[in-house]
Amino acid sequence: MTAKTKLDDRTIVNTKTIAKMFNMTERNVRYLVEEGVIARVAHGRYDLIDTVSRYITFLKMSFDGIDENKVMESLDYEKWLHEKAKREKAEIELAHLKREMHKADEVEKIQNHMVMAFRSKMLSLPSKSALLLASKDDPKMIEALLERDIHEALAELAEYDAAQYFTEDNVELELEGDEDGPKTDNEPV
Image 1 (cartoon, rainbow, N blue to C red):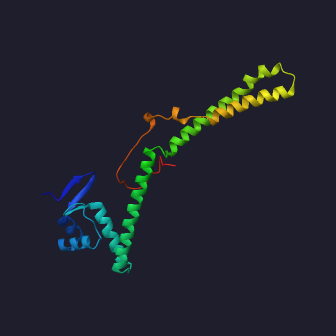
Image 2: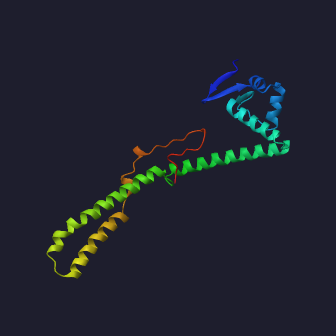
Image 3: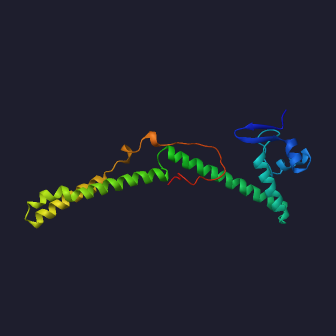
């Protein structure tokens, strides 16, 4: 059996490889698993990057004089933080799928479209109203006509339906596994 195989874009290694890397016996590797310092992905199989990272953290904390119980508590806390982050990410993705939440760039596009439509409507107001108002002498009548046109533009803005500009074709629903870090683009709002 080979010491290294590819599985889900992660490098998976066996106990013997980890023992060689850490300069220890295979029994000591199993002890680290029992103590929660490192984690197996399957019987006798370890995610290389995760295992090395956890072991380095363990060594750093041990070197800093933190006793073993505190190291284990800290590792448990790190596991808890990781699980919490995964849960929050899943909740955000679910809210996005249910359309309870939208990505920031989607919201920005819709708002920009709303503002541009309103701007266009307001800029066309003088030319639309000029001919009609030119024949009017009564200031109250002019005011009423202008007010009507302004309210019409505001009503159009209030009744703006983003759904007509927001289709399934321009929505990217990506449910991905863990990556190197949080996304900075397309953050949900």
